[in-house]
Every structure is written in C-alpha cells, then in structure tokens.
Image (cartoon, rainbow, N blue to C red; front, side):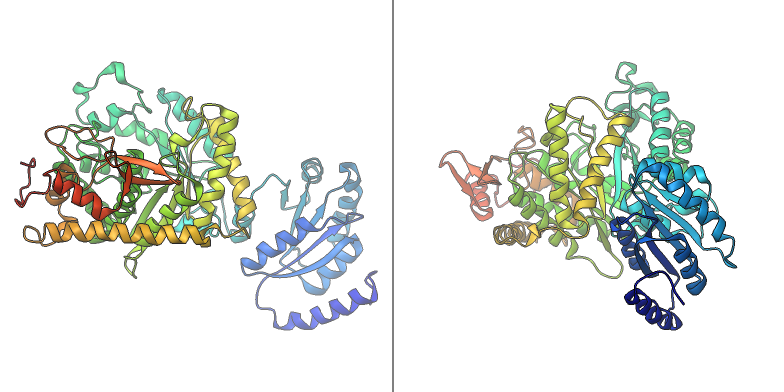
Length: 579
C-alpha cells in the first residue's frame, strides 16, 4: 500500500497499525494539510488530547487529502484534527476535495480544523467541520471541547457547582471577577455580556452596602447611598433576574458577598435565588472594628460561626477572608500567616468540607515579589496542614487592589506581572482584578480585557516555568514566617488556657486578642476599646512589626514582650476592655 509518504513513514504506520490492536482509548489523528508545514498547533492539540486520555497519531506536515482518507479508513479514528495556516483562499479547494472524499468513509469521524482567524473563517463557511478553532481560544476551551463531546446542549458542557467546575478545568484554574455597577439594569446587561463572552467561570456579584446591611430593613436604607460600591438589589426576584442573565455562553457560576446583618436569612436568599457558588465570610470584620457594620466584634464573629456552619450543613463551599483583610490593614506578615491557619481551623471545626482559601498578593504593595511569594507559601502550608479526607483546601489567588496603578497602561503590566507570580503557587482559582480598579469600577469590556491578559499569562506559565517557589531566600523566609506564626498561636493558647478549652476557636478570646493588641494592625483605630500598639514597616521587601523607638524590626516574642511592657497583658483574664 502506498500512502504517498516516504518509506520511513510507511514503516511508522505499519507499526502503528499493529499497535492499534491494543489501543484502548478513542483515537485522534492530527496533521497539517495540503501544502502547510506548520505543525505546532496540531501537535499541541494532540498533547492536550493525550492528557485527556485519548490515543493520538500525528501524521505530519503537508499531508495530502488522499492520505488523510487512507488513514481514516485504516484506523477509523474518533476524530481527525487538521491545521492550515497559509493564505485563506488556498484552503478552499483543499476542503472541497476533503468534503468529496470523506463520503467514502463508512464511519465518519469528528472533523476538527485549526488555523489563523482568516483561514478559520473560510473553513467555517465551507460547512464541513464539526469544530473550527481560530487561534483565539485558550487552553481551557480546547480541554473543555475534548472532555465534553457527549454534551447534548451547551449548558450540559459546563459544571454548575464549584468543586465540579474546578475538577472539569484542571490543570487550568477557574477564573472569577467581581462585577456590580450602580445601575441594576446596566448590571443585568453586563452579566449577559460577560456570560456570552465566556471569559469567566464565576461572576462575583458585587452588591452595594445598602443591600448588604439593610436588605431586610428597607426603611433604614439611605436612598442617596444606593449603588455605592456595587449594584443595589431590593428583593429576591431581582437576584433571580441577575442569575437568569448569566444563563448563557459558558454558564458561569454566580456568588455574592455575605450580608453584614441578618446573615442567615440573607444566605438563604442567595442560595435560593442565585445558587450561591460559595459563601465568603470574614471572622474579624464587617462590624464596629472596620465600620462596615454596627455589630460588636464578638457578636459578628459568633454570627460568622453560625453562617459557616449553615453552609457546611448544606455542603456549600466556604471562603474565609482573614489573611488578606489583615494584610490590607498593613498587619505584619506573621499576623497574616497566623490568620491563614485560623481561617482553615475555624472552617474545619464548623464542618466545612470544601474550603476556599484566598491569597491576596501585593499587600502591602511595597513588598518585594520574592518576599510576597514567601508569605503566601507560608499561608498555604499553614492552611493546608489541616487537610484530610473530610477537609479539602482550594487555592484562590488575586492581585492586591492597592498594587494597581491609576495609569491604566501601567496597571495592565502590573496585572500580568502579579498573575505570573500567582502561578508559582498553582492556584485552583484566580480572582481576576480589573486593571481599571484604581480609577473606576470594572465594566464588561474591562473585565474581558483584564481576563484575557490573565489568560495570556496562564497560557505561558501552565506547562513549564521557572520555579520561583523553590528559591532559597523565598524558602528561608517562608520557614521563618511559619515559625513566627506558630509562636503567636501558641502564645494565645497558653495565655488563655485557664479560661477557654479552645482559645483559638473562641470568639471571646479572639476578640480580647484584638482589644489587647495581640492580634493587631496599624489601620485598626486605637480607642479605649482597641488599645494595640501595632506599627509596621516594609524592610528588605518584608512587612515586619516595628519598634519606632529603637527603629528596629521585632519578632513575635519581642512584640509580645513590648505589649506586656506597655501594660496590655495584665494577669487578669477578662473578656472586655483591658484594664
């Protein structure tokens, strides 16, 4: 049998034919066709297919139509993937011939085409191929195509819960972005546009403060504040309308902020109306400590426990925001690392099975990339030390808002740079931050552009990149931070051991830690209630506790000793304002 190839190729195909007897998986044949010798696209597609469990056969460059048909008859492949990257008009007679010869096949494979956008446009017009790729698709779209050939309709191709969506897209991280405009109608239309663009897996609905705080008490809303910080939503039906807007394109999941009051009824509304993909809740915040609510700190922490447990009972994933909330308030690195462990511990103890740990890079924004990476690696190791068969941690990374410049061109570069840094920790989720955030809230076009920037970085990093995480200085700092965080946690356990059976879980204890300054950050307003003495500086790229008097960095023992020296660690064990 002559295939029109060289003798070497004939020998190869004979061997492959013998191997075909033991093939267990669906076979894909790939080649560049006609006079095209560009094979990188074909080979990359076959490599992705192998990762998804297919058997593959690469037929080579410039393979003629007659030879493609011979191979199809010989191997009866599940799919034939053909590439052409030359002049668009020249592909037309090749495809016409292919259409004619394909009628000879008793069993039709799936026909897939890949080429430049102009060539792909011609291929689509010919109406022969089952799927045409035009080089604008990202890796995750190719993987989704290879995994979902059995889909009856578009909605079936996309998993509808967080854990399944992550599993479906691995090794590609799922992408989320915050979105909520002051106008409800503009937000609804924007959600439709985002879903149709297929750029996101998760739309994080950003609601305004009125909605978070006064959803069940509309009479207390300040109408002048409607739309401040997000979209105003007045009732459950409006939430359903926004969810319906997302049901198109790639059917992105939707999630929303937790309430800052009436937290359980609000969670029930979100679960019923938008099928809230996961709950995000802070332990120490959204109360009188930060002004985002009127609840006292200890009360809000007990509410957070109830909210976490409520979602755990329904097997809804939970995210705790602690590490980056402390970091955003310029807490030193050891506090943020300790907060990562506390978050994981509280989630696990309250019954959460799927825990989403968010790691915000670039806070404070003066930190060096290497020391920032070390901090996040320490946070990850502390949080994931609690994993077992019943408790799984998912890594979610994001850029820090203070990091992005008001110069939008510079911000785009910063977004790309921080994404490359984030890829060093192999995230399951990337929370994309719109490059415009330092100037204005992200609109659908900004979200699309920002996400494509992030996707470009992921594509470059996903299958091989320098391992920044193994850098010696990074690892040294990681170990140092873990040691410091453990010292702080052990101190709290010992200091409160006589008044609590589990001090690190006890809202009264943790509230007292903030009051005394054991857990502290410079941005916490120091009043008669909160009397910490926290001071921090970025030194050698690290955010460290700092003594302004001696102008020196402090480790955790030195910082705690200074609290005692200032009279904030008296022997009394009171859960109230320090005497």
